[in-house]
Length: 493
Image (tube, rainbow, N blue to C red; front, side):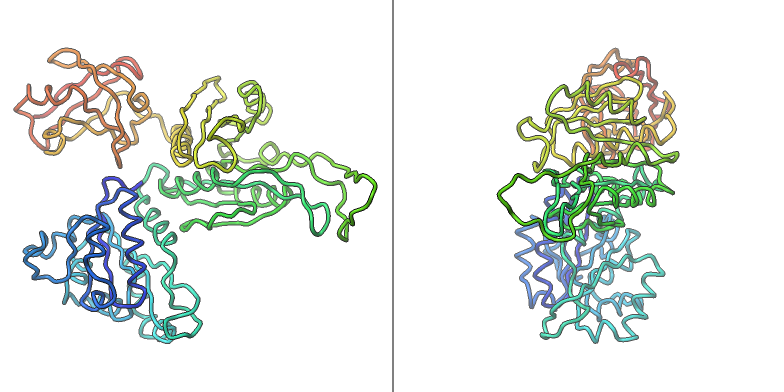
């Protein structure tokens, strides 16, 4: 999710510094290159070796540390960063940054960087509430710094109050949200529903289903990471609330319908990944129904069909969980509910459906198209569904576009394709042909984050055949046959 990104993690002195190790691990696992800067006081709480072992990168503790690759040029880290995260951030560090002081590697980096800065404060409650600290925070927010937390809870002093470092998952969510500001869904508002509704029978019991909410949460997080303003409407789940979005909790299908109607007033798309009940009790007992010898009969009536009944000029994406006749049932629902896309999955299949971390789905569109996807993680499925949403929301790109070359492209023999033109190319690892002045090149579409797609196979020899190509040169792609054949020509060497 963060592949190709460089994160600078600033760790300042405080008992919460130990949590920064988990954050460094999560950033690294997400694919980021993580460069850690520790203040002198931070090293009193956590050893630099801890972060070096996690990130496999040198840890910077001094501006004049000769063993660091960043020791000579103090702004090198600032220029390399895609994002700077300070966690934990003490009152002292916040004050120095707000005053423009650059007396150590962390404050120097923050002052010199053009990358967004995320600050996760952690301090004594009185220090946080002090007017001086609040003025410093307000000043940094005005300058574009993003604050996450602090949280409420037991502090190192033993007191309860505001000042705890927020959970690492919340910091990670904020990082993803900030990095996604220029994504292909920037400026769009996406409403996502998740989880299975609970329909009361009495004050104790309810009718429910096996939905875990994982698919809906994955879509909400993927939408956020692509720049959308997200409203997640969620039935009860065991999942933590995602950061960086509005979350609305509901329980019944009636509540779901009302929440969706309100949230979609300004929406560009509704992704209905929730599993609302099809039937609800005609009447709910006021008291717990006692167990008796006779059989219990509950009179059920049809529940509202939320996605069919909600109105508006937004895209509608539905999910169809089936146990038989998958495509026939999904296609019928797609037509009857007047949807733009339907995501169908067989919940009886292994590693697919309710409660799993993977899913195998087929995406159907209103024009009769069918896209059968292999088994993927639910996050990967979410991105594939959103690829289709983007294609419907954004204008169709032209069939000719240009790419400005960099030294990395020429040296590696590859050309990345920006997300705007992603839909002009076939899926990952699918074959395609490039028609060039050096003949036809058999290539394939490959993943390249954050650019989403990369052409590599066969291009190294083409670059070698054109030594005149330099960084700053321009090549042009023209679609000859969509998804199969393209013309590649040099515009400017």
